[in-house]
Image (cartoon, rainbow, N blue to C red):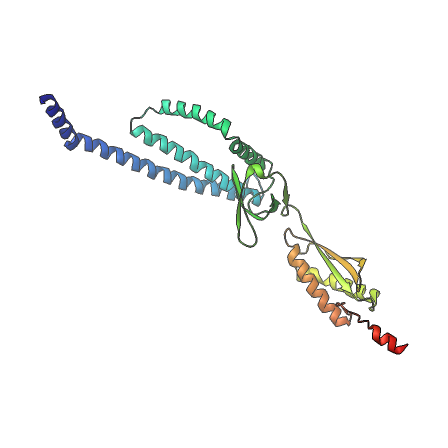
Length: 291
């Protein structure tokens, strides 16, 4: 009983004594300082990275704006991961844990997990080649894996694509097997105009051609003068003529709507009729009465 009482009294003295609380206080202070320094390093690092890419037009390091946005976010995220990992290791050291043994164990565990997480490894490798080959960047309008929209973020494991209706699709990079990028080269606006069979086709073509010469001065998205290719097809009640126009990337929808409006107004001014659905009624009784 005497030994047990002495041990109990020693434990109480240790818990209530100043040495334990001083050690805990110093440890807590060290952890707070590590976290504060980590946040400051991340914030300053993000500013330096942003400034570095903002000055891309100066000196030999020149990249496009779309690639700048992708690399800027990727490098900033990588910096955050590295700083957080270092801070985590330093916090473990404050608890006097053997970091070398933990890292060795983590390496063995990571190897075992790597064999089981083949999809994760595939996503990371695919993300590396997406960024390295510049398949698409932040701000591009793409279509891939049944998803179409603007790229919001490209990471090493996933990419985020925002549809024009607002939905954000998160795709693993390993699933991005085929990509259609609409933002790399200029777009082509294609407009089909229908004219009634009763109208003079030559007059309609002349009116449209004169209109197309005026449009580049009204719409800055047009890079060249639109072209009237001629009669595209002969429909059931109309003659279809096709117009094409080379425009800035992703502006073909806007310009196509504008061309339809301009052509409609010009044909109305020239008195050229645009066909509308017609129905012919046939009555057998009237035919018998006439006979």
